[in-house]
Image 1 (cartoon, helix red, strand yellow):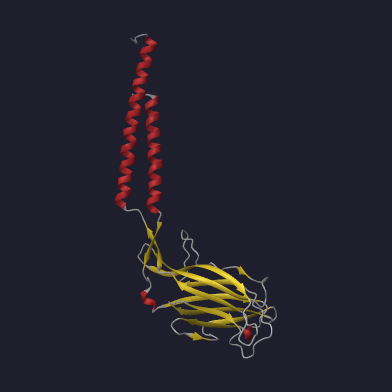
Image 2: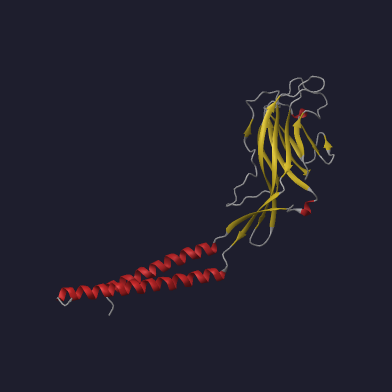
Length: 271
């Protein structure tokens, strides 16, 4: 017949094994995100292009004056880019919200929102603005990946000098996300620094603009979904069960020895 103390040890061991088993099972079922850095162009099938999404509001500039210009070190110089873009009037037509989806080459360059493409240049163009979105590549929405994929979201320059130009200097970092099935998605994070200044043309007029000057980092960040291998899970369970019963045996032996010694003391037989 087992004593109550032995039953207590057995029950505690079973509960402890159950707790560790559930912990290991949770870790086995859940996926983990492993990140690594390497030097390479991850998206070689893109044709040397990066997709850009831009959403910006200029509450004090008419839509007919707003334009997007793109230029880079490969010789591209496009004034008034209109493909896949939309202008939405704001403030009863006094302002404009510009939304554009376009591609840039994987070389240093810039794109800028300005009045350069307007037929007639305004006397006092107001470049105060709010940036709602600026992102590159595919949209990544993964719970455990927190990166600077839309670092300029919410940038508010409404209180700045209306005639000032704004330079946003971007360092674009290629990013790859690989899920459990091996499917890869390509996106880009970026860091940003900005400055504000008043620029004059060769005629002495002030023609402000909102510049996004970019360069690409040679370092690629890769996030990979992984799950604990089955053999490691089985090994951990065996180690938990074996280790727990070994410790339980030692405790049971100590309790039994101490109990026998206490009985001898009570009977006066302890020498």
